Length: 199
Image (cartoon, rainbow, N blue to C red; front, top):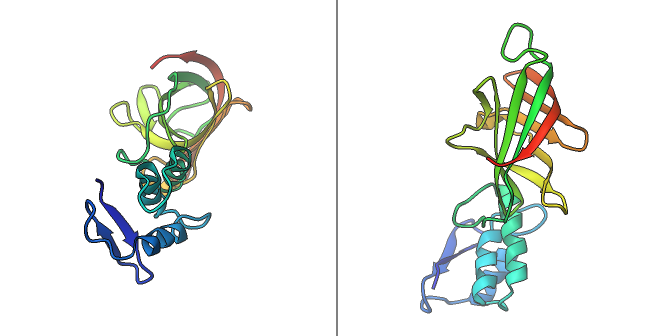
């Protein structure tokens, strides 16, 4: 059986391995629910595991999937939590319409966005480059980005507003046909000009 860590009101945790050592299972589940809300998310993954295994709660794969997705979307990608979702990789080309004067890509240059994977959240694995220079993620290690996927299984929107992680921010809006990337105060705006499937 898996290990479960339950938060306490003091911020520490108690847990168990196997069937031994549990003093108050109901209280543990209650505390997890307090730490998996609209405002707080760090208890969602453990609560998802409890629903998967039927430990302290009813076994409920649908609830488990929703809780995993909430954890992934709010806290970011974790290999042990965020599961693969079937997805056909997409590749977009885009032309620069606005660039930083004298720095980096210039208007008219062509850039590429590769969306190579999808996980619960949903989180897309993305890589954005201009002239072979990676601006967001890298070919070796694409970044995980919160995204929206349409009913047809294709990308609709991708958004990362956290500049502090080293990649800058990126906003991809397929319906509007635009990409906006900003890093170190330099803004790059692009118009999507092409789309195909494949890595």
